[in-house]
Length: 282
Image (cartoon, one colour):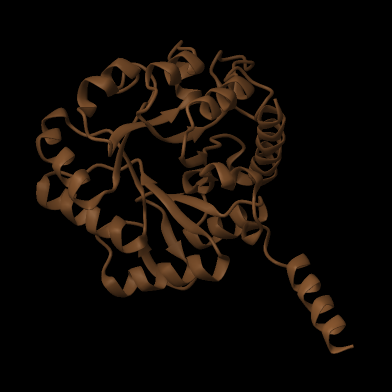
């Protein structure tokens, strides 16, 4: 009788676990599907964690300018003191969410970059997403190798420095810790095919900013849409990620309907997982 009660209790606990604590289908492939906190830039980091949890995601990419909130003063700046870091860690632990990446961030010199790497090490962050000055690679590659933390070069749209995969390859060198944070929506905005860009960067894709975009507004500008309904070739991108045996953080970055985009991110994550299962079954 006691065993039956214990089993029932375990089942009940499992059924009420936070969505972010449940195993996602893409986890086994090493795909850390989460959200860029910038998607919730109108809210403090603590509130962003709540929204990410409600989307069924368990990873977050933090960004430097966001207020922390949740009773903690300051911003998510890598220069925060040790006490504030501990408070941030508690916020994350309470929600069962892991910081998988940090960015897009820059630092002014080698000393400041070392401070950034120390911050990432302390919070268990695997990827620093950045668009550094080219002269900084003389020590950036060395620091990435030393800390074993990825420096992932992000591609804002043309004419930013890293908008094209060729530029990433030019500066990345031969370190396995330096490569691309592939923003597939920005590639579309730059007139590039995201699948072809991924192929060009094969073996160097360390993380992703995942978005689907569409140009259907009077001003002719692209905006985010629920994944699978835009021009980012989401299914083909997922298939290419699988072919390349990609492993790393995938940050949903939804820069539209800022006041309430959680439902669209949740629907996008649902589509991603459905597409992943279809492609995996082939």
